[in-house]
Length: 235
Ligand code: HPA
Image 1 (cartoon, helix red, strand yellow):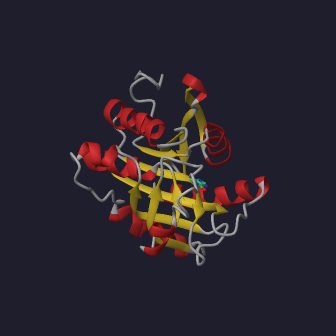
Image 2 (image 1 turned 90 degrees about the vertical axis):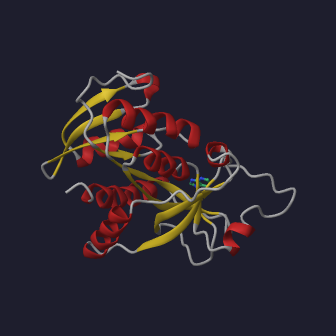
């Protein structure tokens, strides 16, 4: 048992999917796992272990934002020995060539959060995905006919940006950043610190240039494709 996870030692697999929404974790466990068992309900942040194509896997909700996400990731790695962590989430498109429902893989995750600068005493660090997982995701996506857009993403501390000083995404767009979400830089930072493997796979649920967003049903089915791809990395 850790501070935020009530699982007993051995109840969590070494491969874990990480949706922000705990109900998404429940949905993945109930629809894509066999023999799913719930191991965590502390703060309603549901976690399950089960099997996918014979491989033991877990799924753990993390909440939104780097601080919440990093609490769960830290405990999964340090207290439960997790070795592979795949974030499955949503993101906002910030470029014209990134469309609603696209699947984006974060090869790197820049951030406006103070967490990196604080860890590196003011110097910068480039939070980077596992190349092995990124390559496998790219190959598996191709094999199942999913188009994956890969590149830098922005992990922001803010969902609602103040627009007083203009478009806060403009500088990120100019430097080729594909999309914005709120967790991956923290995930990649912790993975580097503990020498484990991590990758973020995201579907574009809204667009910051056009203001469009996907419907709830659309979100669900897009999410299933993405979690199927994420689970394919376990086998
Ligand atoms: N901003 C930040 N995180 C997000 C967004 C967004 O627009 N959409 C989905 N996650």
